[in-house]
Length: 247
Ligand SMILES: [Zn+2]
Image: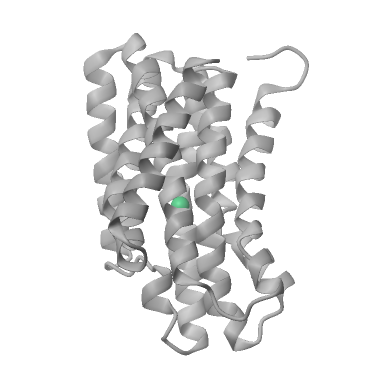
């Protein structure tokens, strides 16, 4: 880690930045009342490309510390996401499902679902910092960008029911607060118990890969033409891989 700032504080601040990015999803509601589905779908496609590119970084870093541990950690990451989905009983929201439904219960459910879903992302940020500040920074950027359409989805549910843009932004940020909260213990764990590092990096990659293939891309394909989603995801993925090579 870098000299100067307390590393745990640094990890916390990066995690907090990803949470604050979720609030950016409320901004389009300053001038519009409902979300344009194609825009949200393409934002998810950008997030998918960034996350996939970042996952390659996690896997290559992790396999430097232990190959089979990275693979096994990846499997645990996938199982973790499956387990949280089971707890949430398949109620992972997308802009498409929630846009039409009414009721404060739906708003609450959406915020709860998004909050639970943020735990693995917080672990990913913290674990990545165990592999160094550059890797941590890359994962932070990927998660932060991925959070923006999530804030958009939350705002898309709250705003038509009369919530102010400020409260849409606030609740979006709240839904991602597990990220700074989980990042610090995950970081301290891999720093104090180094054999766990390839497991944790693999876990983060597995969880993120699975989210991309199971949630982000299927949602994006529903609301935007497939060639556009494919093109945006591919270009973002290539740019992310090249960016990591240049570090
Ligand atoms: Zn997320």
